[in-house]
Length: 460
Image (cartoon, rainbow, N blue to C red):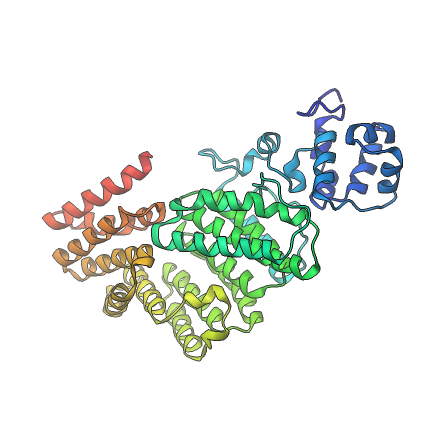
């Protein structure tokens, strides 16, 4: 019991890592924290001296008085030597060391499949059960907060978060997650701490949703730059906040995006489970458009598993839901999904089926992808890159090697302007198909160019 905390507190550092204490800190239940300290032999007088409070104040807190003010919580954390991230306050080096398992490390402590199962269990609990806001979420949730926020907030502060999220999301669409991820995380550093500020209930509910969407964007940009652990961290926190904000539509969006991460990792079975949870949230939201988007992505998962019957059935339902959807009443996140995106999904699913089941599916994939490519504007450069890659694969599968190689080069040209690891990784199937046809000089040149392009990313 001689270990000292990093701030020089006489309280042993290991005290903060006991599960009961971690839970109390996460919920900011200072009365519980003080009572647990008393059990560890810390006197009421010592607590008062360390926190700068009077003994009467400490006594009142021990009796159940709540502590809400951000500056008081910060003073208590600093005085006692609490790793501030454990309370959702500024994320400090001490906390970073103690939760190092959540960092994006080349040698993660847990296998990726274990992390996927943990996220899925958490997602299921939040989606179909009661959310426990701030509770310990295992080895995949961190608290990247640093910058102080006001002691009291109003709707103007929340609108600022929403406006920043819209602007940063536009950058992500056009230039890739690498163009804005750091800015998203920086915005979270300030925005997350607003949870500790005083506000009306209406403002707080909207804040939950605004921060959920900002974490959602942080997860997506992390995914796009290849930071999978960070993506899972942010999506997990986004899901908790969306539940707190009682926003089923946003929960559906978060789960749709996490499912896409698992598709990218070639874990279609896990992706399908996450999409199905998202489907529950989408149906609860009452939006046909949201339901249609989840159906289309479920179809993609089935296609990756080689189940053409289920894939086509869900793709058909996606079309039906889209045709009945009232876009003006759809949740904000779903409004991006229009006829162009539907064509893109049809082409993507059929491309997957052409690779996993039968090359005949190229006949549907090519016109659908062509429609999407011709209609995606410059602001959707990444989506256009994905579709060009899929189009090139289809032409190679059909035997039109020269044309496939030409389109493949266009995909590489466009991707070179994007700050997106994902666009490079999505080209691996194209490289493999070109490699199979290496006796053709056009295919050989394409295979080598894609290899150089993706290899440069690996080296980085």
